[in-house]
Structures are given as structure tokens and as C-alpha cells.
Image (cartoon, rainbow, N blue to C red):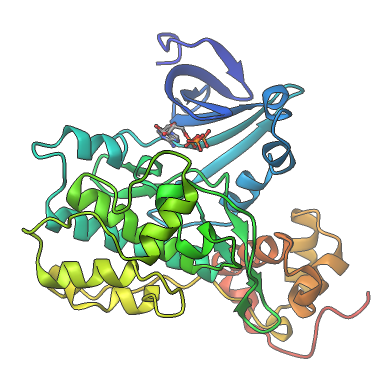
Length: 361
Ligand code: ATP
């Protein structure tokens, strides 16, 4: 396989093959691991080109930092990061079924059947809810960023505009004000330059659902006319919804596309909606793993984790006990995820809940 693999160059342990897609600042190519022959996708950001856009350059590494924290069947998995002087490479699992946009365009009536849309929307809800639980909003959910694997399951990609919203202090959402994402998928509070939170992703799920069912977008105006788009949404001038969809499907769609974010359906409510009832199985939302109690962690585990992950013990203590101090940093999530993984693989060590174990050495 390795000998016959057509490649242009090598990056780390990967041979770089054919082009899969091009974004604004990145090129995504197929690749192959030189030892295992595993096929992967590798997203390369040209650092010199990214310098032209201060937002992209400043947040170059954030996309990978965020992906590193996510482990969900419907979210693309980051495998490795390689950085050179001129490029930043993100090695990801390879998905070969194309994107949902392509599926809509190439289907017979340029739209998807309601039962397929139901499956996709259910998977998107569980993935986005998981991200929200982790304190992360996606902010760029569009049909081009929904890939399909060979079993026709959704894999969400492109975390370039994602950011942290978690405030563990009171478990509410810190509003963010950055304007981003594709306007056609953007919630009215975002278009109206208001503070916004995770509800913007819920709105975008509605736009994606409309696009799949109708093969068009719910609100269309001249490109870049954000004011007209905002006004159209607030006036409720939505494009024609196909007549052949069921009333419960339409009901959920309109609950997603509720202009007032406070009245918009939440994801836990959405997953309970009667539209999903005929899927014939209990749909459960996957919680983001929560922190183990600081008191429950044995000394030997602390030593192991700090050494293995090259963490300063104070960083670990502050992430575990004073997470206010790092509520916007990914350290909070990173330590959490690593602890969870470690404790899962070593359950025996988890059992000795004595007094606090993180006191000074
Ligand atoms: P944009 O400028 O649209 O935000 P981007 O530069 O952030 O794009 P991505 O959207 O992450 O780049 O990827 C660009 C394209 O590469 C995608 O539309 C998709 O076709 C392809 N692609 C990305 N990741 C994968 C993957 N893991 N497997 C297969 N194809 C992929």
C-alpha cells in the first residue's frame, strides 16, 4: 500500500495524497500513515496566508485545541497535530461519504426524505448538545460542514469558528459577541449584533433541517445584505416549507427557527420531540464527562497524571478545585478529559477515597 500510494509529500508520519476539499485558508487532503497504512484526512493551514486575516492567525491553534476535547461518534476526531515553520496540519479521521450539501444537490428532487433528515437531525442534536455540555459552541453549522461516513452517519467538521462559552462558576453561558459564521445560517440575535449564546447553534440546526427538507434556505436575500436578512427573519417572511412534510416535522422546524432565543426550543427538549418518537429506540444525550471528585483521586494517580501529561501539579489542582481560574482556558477540559480516560482505564486506583490527596508534597 505504502509503495503504491500516490503522494506529493510527507508530513510527520503521513504521506500526503489527493485533495479532498479547499476552504478559505486551508486545504484538506487524504493521507496515509507510513507504518500502519491507516487512511486519514489532513487539513493544512498555510501560516503565511493566514497572517492576512488577524482572526484566523490569532485562532490558528484553537480549532485543534477544541477538537482535542471532543470525543463523540458524530464529531470528526482529531488524531494528531503537526506544525512546521510555514504550515499547521491537523490530522483527522477520514470520512468518505461526501457532505450533506452534495447529497441534497445530487438527490432526485434536490432535497432529502423526511426519515433521512430525522436521522441526521437526531445525530446533530446529540453532537451539538455534547459540545454545549463541554462549554463549546460551533457557530458554523452548515450543510457543507456535515460529512457522511460510509454507514451514512453524520460527522460534524470545521471547528475554525468554535469557541468556549463555559462558565463553571455558575454554569450559565458567557455571552460572546464575535460576529461569525455564514449569514444564511446565523441566528437573528447574532445578525442583530446582540450578545448571544449556545442558542445560535440551535437556530443553525433549524436552517440545516430546512435546507435538507426543502433543498433551499429558509431566508434568502442579496448576498451580504445582513440588514435585510435580519428584518426578514424578524418579520417571519420564511421561504415556502414543502407541503409533503408531516406536521410534527414542521412543528420542530419552527421551534428551532424561533427568532427569540429565550423562546427557542432547547436541545434536551428537541430530542424529546414527538417527531423522533417513531425511531423506535430511546435516544439519550451523551453527557460530557464531569470531573471526578478531587477527594476521590489517589495520590499515585495524581503523580502519574502530572508526570505523564507534563502538567504542573498546581495547574492540576487549580483545574480541579478552583476551576474559576481557568474557566476560559482549555486546561479545564483537557485535564478533565485526560483524568476521565485515565480513571476509566485504571478503575482500581479510583477506589480509595480518603482525605484530599492534592496537598503540598
Ligand atoms: P471554510 O473556509 O469553508 O470554513 P475550512 O478552511 O475551515 O473551510 P474545512 O471546512 O474544515 O476547511 O474543510 C474543507 C473541505 O475539506 C470540506 O468541505 C470537506 O469537503 C473536506 N474535508 C474536511 N475534513 C474532512 C475529513 N475529515 N474527511 C474528508 N473530507 C474532509
